[in-house]
Length: 111
Image 1 (cartoon, one colour):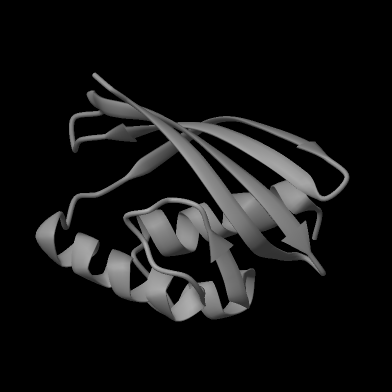
Image 2: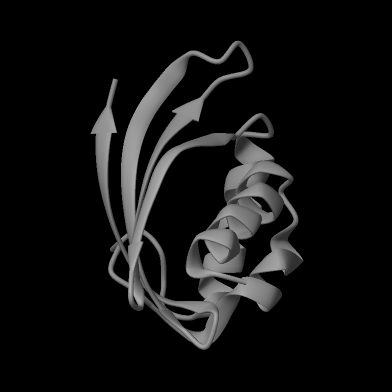
């Protein structure tokens, strides 16, 4: 899979289908997280979003664009409600290693 395909599959399965175990396929175990609201490592990511999906069962992200070069990728997306109304905009930046997400940064813009 290309880096773009890895990201697209991860967002569909993990964020939109809420399959927490998908992180085991797409995220390095020693995942480096630069968002202070989420702990370090794959297990911390899984735990944070397992809680998020319980508190917000309609959580959904629509990818608007992915820009990838070498081992880096930027994803512009929208968090939308069940009617498709944008709740916030996000840019996620990833470093990939061996076809898996290895490091993450993000910027959020509330609507």
